[in-house]
Image (tube, rainbow, N blue to C red; front, side, top):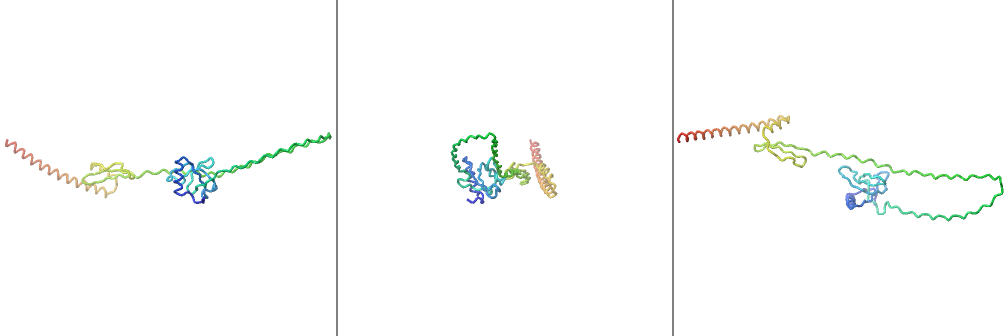
Length: 228
């Protein structure tokens, strides 16, 4: 497999199903991952891709760091497994030969050579992956409050995004006028005043008609009382 292609959408879905089954799939770092390209790690978690592009959490050594799908590729079978090296057989120890005794009394003692301690070269660790990007909080959906007039009634409704918070309900004309007064737009206020003026005139006409009908009914009642 070409380690420079990155994970495809199908491979990410396969990794998600493997994690759900309790497995930790192996992946190999691509050239996009930088100095650790070619190394092998294990996927331990998939976070929300909408929060960050680096949503594939990979265990590499003792660290668990997030990467984007372009930084990774599916590891081939057998990758990351170490083959046990055969231990060398110990050489048989030579039988010491006894030294002949020396009869020279003034022979100086030669000090034994000092054994130098083997130098241990420090193992360079790969550079640490950059820190996880802080997730940006999602802004709340917009809120819309609607004041409407139809069929002689004023109604108010509220909606946030696609969710209806309050269904249209009837309010008094005076309350509707107060709400419109908060909007400093002369054209809107004039339209509301015209609607209220037309409703007032119609209500006065109905009141005059009812008063005239009531006067006729009272006169008829007075006549009936006089006749009795």
